[in-house]
Image: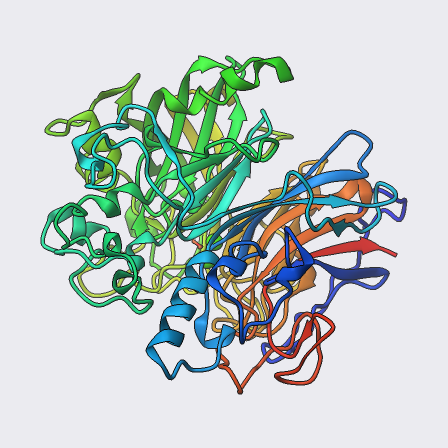
Length: 599
Ligand code: FEO
Ligand code: CA
Ligand code: CA
Ligand code: CA
């Protein structure tokens, strides 16, 4: 079934790796190497990695922790480019020895803050298709952290809901947090989702919005509220600081001096990421998931049209500032009586139906009774609750396939579905105690991304067919697929195959997380094949599939996450003796961006 010619990424699926495997596993005929690791210096070799002594200032000049979204923006010729990466969060228990003094506690907190955010890193290689090296001190290198100045765009910029004592105009938020997945726009900028921002704030915790967003009056695990008062929203003047996080961020990696923006028109929730497509009308559409159990899928449609060409870059960079925001309602076409919650197919042989994009804001004006436009955009979850959106099983990446225009939603899992007091199985979320997740495919009406109607069906109901009842692989024989669980990020290759990276296989099907190819057409539709596995404790993120170059990139996030300092469970990627640091190689886990190429 595999094409052996160069440029098609031919491979034979790897065996699933037991969850204790501390190795990065690639198919026969492929090699791998880290491109950049946590703590690698970006601006000067004087900032060499040493977790025992690193200062917050140095950490802000090094590659950050827990890489998630990845893209490689290649220049013409493919020998130079920019790597753009999100740094979602930090694992202090793996990064540092236990702190024993107040000064050490503060150093670790501040280094952790600086290791959040994003990195832009110049890369080079001798020929297209070969592995890259990164360039220390390149002009384009950039770190974006918790301290970087941003600007709000869109209808809620300047809203009273966004004002603090530091920014009475409500237009210039500082820093970005918990940057999870993202997307590269057709005009060459990068979008990044601020996801679980609530964990960084202590708040009064009494409002409906605080409760809906998981904001509470309790000390945070990270203790940043003890370092900077803005992280304690009980502090007079900082009540609105949490409202300044939870947005889609846009960064122009080509201009290291540009001010990154937060787009209020795209709403505020636990943004996994955003992926933009130019619709056939020329309007751009951004698809987005809110990664929480029983939360929603959204899309934004721009008011203005995309203009092709580099000279229109500034116009295009404003497209996400004005337009309409919708939330998805899915309707099944099978009787509820045919859904028993185990994931057994209804009598029509498919989990499928129709859907509607319910308007929340149209051309900058609220369509939700009782909500002003500001309120819809800042407290988007409350507005979406009010219009009856469909509660999904943790929608992570929501991404259009460039080859077909169909949109794929990775519903990673939802163990609460069907629990006492919670919603049970529905046709778009057909399994109770959904530990393994599923993938939903959307077809917009007339394949018009701006349409308010769509059709949908479930592509995969994940799990290990050898041990899980009622998996479904679009009709492909379950005994012939790689086991897969907890789909998180998705990508597409040049011919429109779906690639899925996972987060949660060790705790659900007992295998290391990995990257999987899924053909979407013909007899191979649903044939899940594992391409790589990441080491023990890690999730696989940010896949980039450059099949024409026989190359793949992934982020290895939180390797060895269940270990601790002195009790490491992973030595990826340097694999030297525990605790040692020699010539830049460290005996402990380092989240890294890995490149894989055909030998
Ligand atoms: Fe940060 Fe939803 O994963
Ligand atoms: Ca059906
Ligand atoms: Ca994710
Ligand atoms: Ca996840």
